[in-house]
Image (cartoon, rainbow, N blue to C red; front, side, top):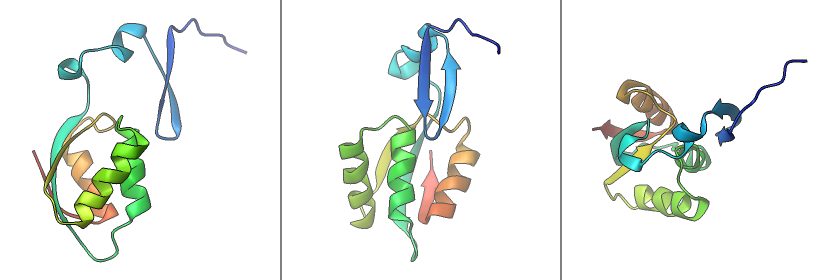
Length: 104
């Protein structure tokens, strides 16, 4: 069994990821992820998965639920999602969930 000397274990979505403490404590402007604008939704939108995606992106449960409601109300949102390294990956995941338009 291999042991790791890790300063912080960070939970992202359903995956455990070992990160050095300086990465976990970065200022928001230096953090990884992407900023995206979400506009509209398509029939069949997976509300639960959208909320989970917000949560995996570093957003609290109450705020994630509020944002999901705002998407359903047709409000255009700008959010930062930590789990996506590129805009393209964010677009692919959010399109599959049922968001109509995703851009920077």
